[in-house]
Image (cartoon, helix red, strand yellow):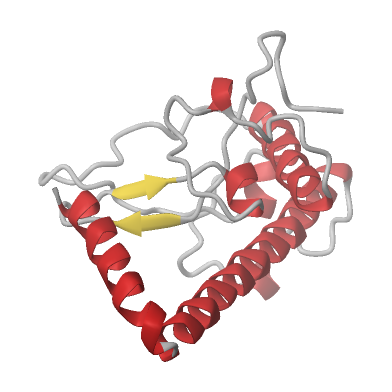
Length: 181
């Protein structure tokens, strides 16, 4: 099963790797491209993504997480899209317990101890979806951290090579100039 509708677009997105620029705005990147060591901003990229139909294990993990998010979001009772912005326009973060939310009970996470959650040992299909999503999220986070370590190690190796150090420094400065414009 896939979370794509008839147009081929995923119905739900997932948290993406982000970079904070000078305006404190996050930049979201295509998860499939990140799996293949490429960074393409997510906005407007989907029709052109060369990995849109990739079936590697990492890309299947992205699609499975989206599918789980869609299944859980379609089950949500009511809407929590009320006033979630402060007076200065920044979004207020008010996380809810995922297990309670799956059952339509919007319990704030703050003060809601895991041991006191009434659905902690529920084991129903919805709670299984939440646990599967948590597992997938943890695997994706580990993958992104491993990729970041690899990039840093490669950059360090290049910088330790005197011939390449100047070229790499110029490249990094060029990239920074693009992002800081």
